Image (tube, rainbow, N blue to C red; front, side, top):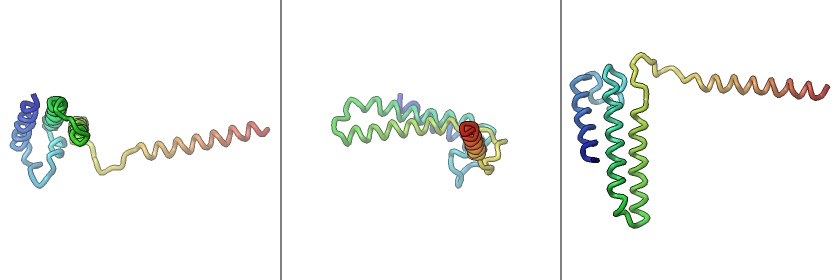
Length: 126
């Protein structure tokens, strides 16, 4: 099953090479997600992650030493990372150069919490 998943990844990558030539090398393969066929790159990442997890599952029985288990654990983490890479938004209409809004919201929420705390202290002192 691992080989099938990795083969599907390679096929999808080759298809994307021809469908979206504007993202061909020297761009990273993850940039295919920014194009019209970004869902195919997400699917390719899912296939690669599944291949890593299937390989780790198949090999786990034969991993006897701590070093073997350590390497198997890293293979599992790599599979999870590939699957997580497939979760990124594949819409090209998002301007990725803008800073995320959550730090601004978090700072504002901290300010509001501080004001509430000061108001609470004033009411308690009266």
